[in-house]
Image (cartoon, rainbow, N blue to C red; front, top):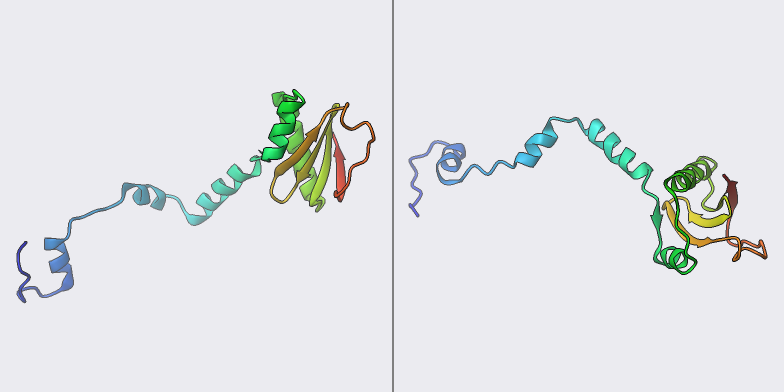
Length: 131
């Protein structure tokens, strides 16, 4: 490596000569979009992200419950309606299935079919949506 001498008039001259141009292409692509556009895109991606907790996934598997695309869409719609009403922990009923959902986190906490909900008692919820 060469020794830097005092023959340069500015730091830009030193940087131009000794530093490699490591322009990140990803940041160049992102710079083409405004902050508002990127924010709206990320928010729209998060709107339909309904997650299932480990417990809910285990319950679905144990009870041989599989959601159709249409049922999943109705579940997401029910969670959206619960969110609009300010419900934090909701019971969402779809056909013969019952789901307890943490609405702010968009997470299904547990799932039951008609055999499990025979007592029809649901606790620790502050609202219900029947789809």
